[in-house]
Length: 383
Image 1: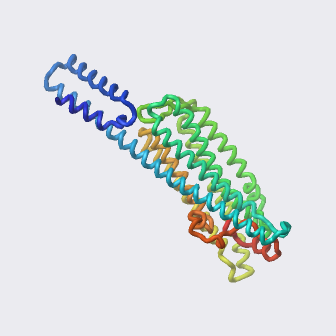
Image 2: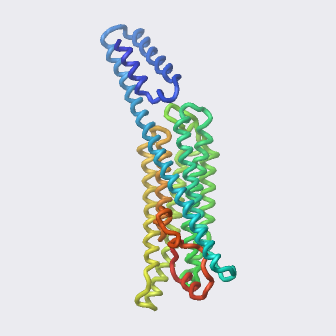
Image 3: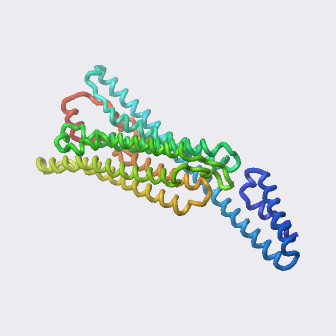
């Protein structure tokens, strides 16, 4: 009777109840092997009770831990999916309303030669939208891994490598946003004299360095390692390099990009601010606001990247396979939100259905002298 109750408890608490009945047979086989070994080596005496109880208690504790991690990973993943869907919907609706605004401006000015379009602002908007879509796809793949990573022998390797590519693609989109924003300011005629050869070199070449680093990271993730299913989800099966090298390189390069882009972004704004103060005593503080927003966004990205790497390395090194991936997913979502919130109209981007159409800022403007001067010397909400 005691043996039956222990066996029933083990089967009930194990998370494989929701996956496959084959796991029941495995547990039963292990249990009876344990009984036969104990009978043959020690006989039926008091030590049997202690030995059997210790083994079963240990297995039950591991099953409870695995079950809690499985449920926790599934809950967090669905929360990420819901947030990703909301973000994609909002950015798609924002894109639609900006296009409507541009069409309205075009209808009021039928001669296209009198219109000018801010292509950089368009690319900033598109890159944020692309990053959110790719992030949502990665969140969806997390659900597939959690559901099939323990039972399918062929799903782990392609799904892990696909997620690595998606993660690098999202990071690339986010840093292209930062790069385009600093290039926008460096190309302003009013700020050309505020830069030097070194800053202009890094302003142009940092995107090339970023591209090379991302290609190297993706290559290491895809070609230098393989994954296999296990009792705790997808696990690293083999690696021809140090297992922590791809993640370490990714952390170093992303931190380096963030610092370089932050310096490139702040430098011309700060010099411009000083120059404006020397001419006009009551100069506008739009530049200072942009500096604060981008500085805060970059600091948040750097801190979350560091914490994510540290937590995944120390706290979740031997846990359920998907938990470490979820740490990077949360970090990726925080970085995306930080970039979006660094825009002056972030409330409109995050909730465009609450804003009236006439308050939407388009990227097409009338090509007038006064407007051109204003566009060059001030900071737009789209940048």
